[in-house]
Image 1 (cartoon, helix red, strand yellow):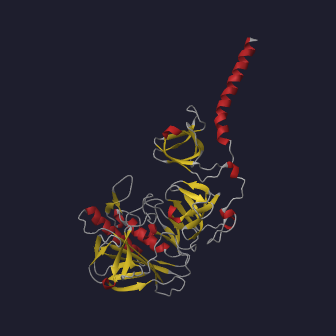
Image 2 (image 1 turned 135 degrees about the horizontal axis):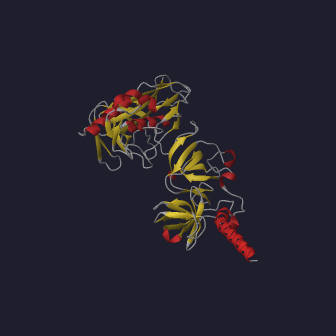
Image 3 (image 1 turned 120 degrees about the vertical axis):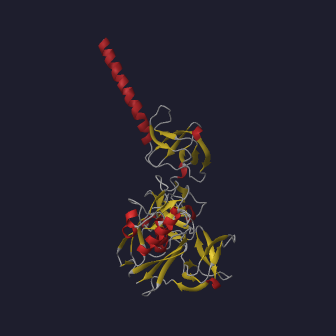
Length: 436
């Protein structure tokens, strides 16, 4: 009897241990449908995401300090949250800046017929969930909502965390029809998205990308001023080739300078070449143009090296001809970035070093990239300099080069051959694309 009693106790202990192990998994799997985000907050410490609302429960993920937290069940002591990997529980006391998503529907409303892309076509849009097409890929600039309709007062279908990718079907006005994680369809404000690239080269213009209609040649030394503040920016020399837009009512031709806008006056321009519509272009026509600016006259060897590298990489790109359907690999054209290939040491963006051979080639590649995406040319691979970008281009429109997959590749998806031409003049770097 004693032995039987001990055996029963041992079995009971084992069963209890199994139940304790299975219970968190049951909690984790209890919902088969993804619950809506009810609150958004920030973590004040590094948080362990636990499988059950208990300090003794094992962790399934972690949330770094200062990160956004997406809450699907809010409680005074514990919150159930969703991460990119899992769902679980965190302590409420370590959250701050808690914002309720008041537009999230209650469970009683879940049975209603959904609005938005699964129903009628929204004004200005030709696609919905049923005929959704992959036009672009883009990323959330900050935490952003997907709405059932192109209206911020409509129901929130999902919340996209910062820097997460969505697929865009089409763009109309200030809105995009998107799909997130292959199952959340709805509308996002274009202003909430950045780091765009086309999946379909003929999807249309990329939101936020300026198209520059002229290549202008400067006829004298000219000081450039900020178009809005009239702050002095830089002086450019005669012969500089710069992209410009249509003149305003004061005769000022706008042009990009870093992340602001400057201008040239009519009397500053020797002559200008208009870009041709790619569909109507003839042999020799200018198709697109982009300009960025880089510092010159800096006496340090590193910045002298950067200017050298910009000129060397630009020289290697100039004259590149792509036939229809031909691939282009930037590393194969201007790399490898070594002393033995002619590059000098200069400042670089790296976690491991402040300088390296080839510093400055990223600006050449960025200028090349922006000229490229003004046309229906397909960029098949691009890397950015983290998510803040670089000072010489609008956020999300930079393109890095370096080792491994830090590269840019593209294919000529136009029905004719094109040629790349780089112009340099005392800190002014311009990339042009011509029809051959």
